[in-house]
Length: 109
Ligand SMILES: [Cu+2]
Image 1 (cartoon, rainbow, N blue to C red):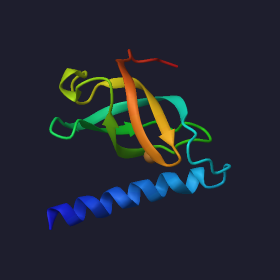
Image 2 (cartoon, rainbow, N blue to C red):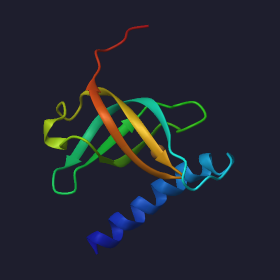
Image 3 (cartoon, protein in one colour):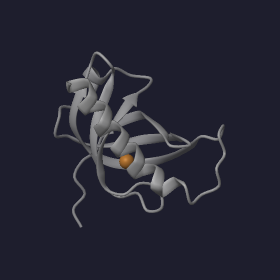
């Protein structure tokens, strides 16, 4: 039952992002990358995924909470949960993963 719930939740978050990307030209093999500022919500060391609560990236990703696979590093090595970070999002036609997670000092404006 828990698996079903997680799967459903995952499908919903993907759908939310897909809505944004469907308007752009579909290109199955192209990978798009962009920087995103987010707060680390939680992590799953077994799957090496990290849940991020991100700020809006205009034209790419509305502000939302979403799970991402982390590549090139272990989630256990990331800054603690609650930390503000800057990540590189890799978007392969609606399939997402992140790299280059760096702690970011608060920017006051
Ligand atoms: Cu998203």
